[in-house]
Image 1 (cartoon, rainbow, N blue to C red):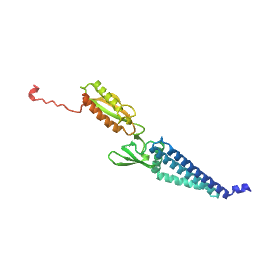
Image 2: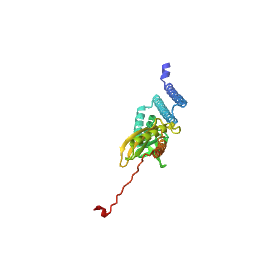
Image 3: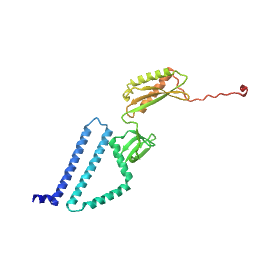
Image 4: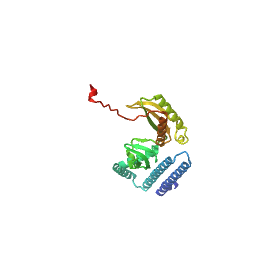
Length: 277
């Protein structure tokens, strides 16, 4: 008699509903516990924390939909409704929808992978194809990029194939200095080394540096100057500010120490006809 009750449609339906409810409760509890643990962690940047919270919400929604769908199929099977035709029809409908909205699905998958792999976040400076600027908004479907001219570009995440992030983890400032051929290259190198040493010890810019500046050169021989390069590893997004300040100090030191900084010029030789003979 007990087995008959367990095999009855009512008992099976109640079991399916109960399992679904327990599954949904478990998903909610796990998601809330993980989010509480995430907010209590101080080592994670705020941008990354927001990305992880978005991923948790997406995964919780997806698991919830899966549990509810499985429970509905179990209920239909309990009451004798054939499930195979429903699954076949759902598969055909899903295929039609996927073909009609494949671009949207591609964008959503691309956005999910960007968030999952933490390729970039709001506030990062990136370049996607011919578009470069600061990320102002990042959703599952698109990325909003504000360029240097103030224009806002909306890039679908499905089109993000190769992305360059110039503010990820750390950045690097590059300053090229041209020294005239008539000058003393060794003297110029010593001046730049002194500037680099004092620059790294400056209390205003020192916290923005991750490594002391390095002087490399000459790295090239141009038409009118030899190029010496100064590189410095900086905090993310601080390379432009550091490069501007470094150029100012290099210019002042070169003027003070007599290092020639040439510029493009032309020399014109004028000859009179009587001078030709």
